[in-house]
Length: 254
Image (tube, rainbow, N blue to C red):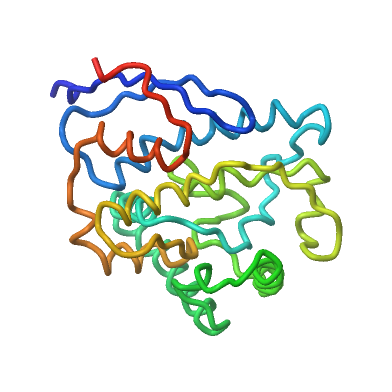
């Protein structure tokens, strides 16, 4: 079967960390929001790489390493397109594997509910200090991300932007003591999840929404119809660049 036709889209994105010159291979056929999320995750990593380069002289090297998983016990904010992307990942798993993951998802959802959190958790935060207190309190519950298995992320290739953007330059061991010791996070000026959320609101109506990763499967299933809708890929990418602020198309798809 031949590869689906794609258009190459070249653009520049201005960020506080510098100008990112990049290109994306956009499918010629209409795409779903989950496809948009997969399409731009590499772009998010390029944006993060700009930040790493800029802050290296003052903050030092990133200390995150394979096997340190404390951040996988935090509340990770995701957008609707990322929830659809994660749902696709689980749906593509063999049945036995799905059951293992979904069992952990249900357990994590129950823990979240018992703690008094739901999909409005992040939108209800009045300020950053309030959010920080919540993140510390949740971390102390010691509830792992349902995709964490034996210290490794089983959703690594489809992990949301919040995971990709979470990098520290303080000792990796400090992350297990959130709220008790100094943790130097790499500053991130652009949040891909927020931009994806705003694109979704523009397309489907309503307010932009961000919710915990733990609720991704339940949220995607509750919004199945929206997840199946397809849109012009070039239009979606242009909307995303507008939300990221500073996107300047260098040329139309070719």
